[in-house]
Amino acid sequence: MKDYYIDIFYSVDDGGYIADIPDLAYCSAFGETPEEALKEVLIAKETWLETAKAENRVIPEPMYQPIYYKMA
Image 1: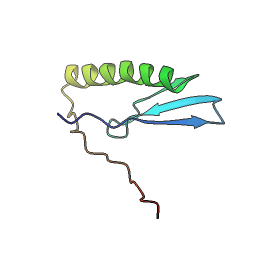
Image 2: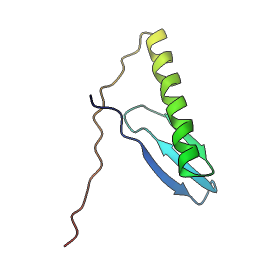
Image 3: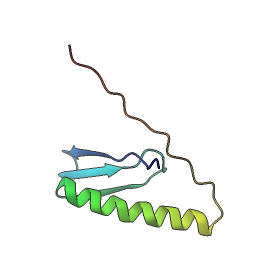
């Protein structure tokens, strides 16, 4: 089963970590550590999906794949 890709990165402007799910518009969360950001975005994902279902919105299939570069 394919799940949604989660991108976690440090934001200097916010002073913490941002976790983002690119396939789900505006679904992101903040944490002081990468683990905290991940925990929070998983909660946000469930809320996003529940709200979309309740409002009969289209839920996108997991599609996003990061680009990996092979180092020589």
